[in-house]
Length: 255
Image 1 (cartoon, rainbow, N blue to C red):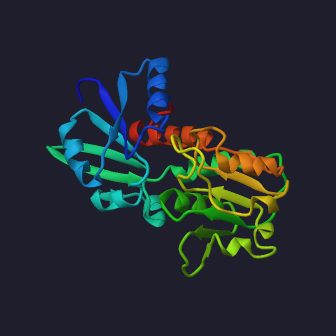
Image 2 (cartoon, rainbow, N blue to C red):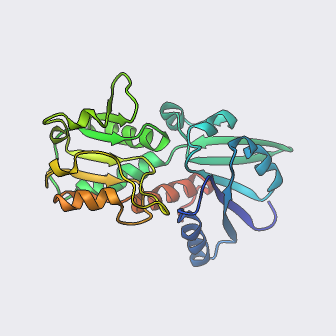
């Protein structure tokens, strides 16, 4: 492919995302003739037209709210994305005038690697709660389960095998789960005062709290958890680790 390669992010809205700055800084540092762009689209149904209109486009990341919806517009999924039902990376192949889009999920490895760093200096035994049921939540749940940590999901809506936030107000409930993962967009810039509705006053220093949100770096969720003495971590390292994994998928090389 002649000309500068283009990579990018699709989602809506994208004002919170650091992906463009991360990749473009890395391209400049490494002397890579490529550019990373934000493609803020209000309808994921225009995905294939976007790829057709940008002939230098070599790969895409996918963020909220399209990690699950995008699956219907892809030609193929790798085994991990297929098992989770969510995609955050798209590989683009152009051969003989035909465009093929393949979906991957690097959120799983990004979360697992970052979460394991948080666990490295803290003893842990127990079960996790993952707040949210979207694509990011599915990736976090799979990463925890692969690492031998049982998981229960929490949603605003009652469903079989899913707790509601009201359930967590029962005596002794939240105390019995020692890992709490916010996989909702609550608290993301610019609406930074949002957080999941849980009984924060019952958290203790034995709780480990991870927020997939990274902008702002200290979310309302993490602030409330830290006030109770919990170990906390935001999603910035996860973002970087999943981005590096995406680059390996697109190019076969390390960034």
